[in-house]
Image (cartoon, rainbow, N blue to C red):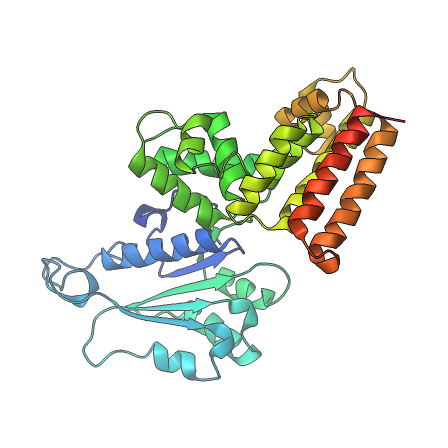
Length: 355
């Protein structure tokens, strides 16, 4: 099965002349882009062997493209019963090309899975079949059958690592003809989070509203404080010993709707990072230590800066305070905001007055 691994740069050129395409992965944005690419190629007449010049134009319409596009059926495999796939793929009374999208093929029952394999092995000339599959062991027989039938495979692996998300942002800006420096990309991740749909929308907004290289300052300006006031920025300020700024960031974060539990989570993560970096060998470079600990080198550098003034005892007491605050913001306290302000003051004391 031919395999392609797209990230964000998916277009009609990505899908060749194969009438059967299987899109594998759980990254919804990338899966949807791959499906749209197949549809675009089909509508443009590039997903099939080109018709003679005297034939109808793309989608069964006129040669000038004024006619209707392909007949598209978009269904979920789990909703299909035996025989329904044959009905969807039967020739139209009006002729023309049909596109059938079968989503979440891993949920297909055995009868539908068998029908998919049989259809892919003997595709009608006027049909384009697109199958999505989450990957993994469930429903693997469907992938095997499609592979044997020669289907084109497009992999959309999950984007989980920091470096992969940075690559995604670079690709998003590059396809729009723009560039963001590393600081700008990191600020965007801090401001928006890790969901690819949100990140892609943020990239589109920045491309439309700004010019030049996208920096951290540009991101901060267009997010009106959201980039600065996240759980991680609150954690950074208090771990650095800047209680006043941490409290200001906390109040702003709560004002713009940041969930209290995200702030306690960021505090706990920051303390754990300090503990891991602080207990590691000081002789290693940030790059080498980052590789050992599974974190980017810039995070190691930041943790080393923040670790000044901290002791193992102080970190342990701060971590206990955060655990208590986490329980409080999840329902044990009457006022989550007060619980968060109090834990910031305790953390500051743990740093300033180690035992």
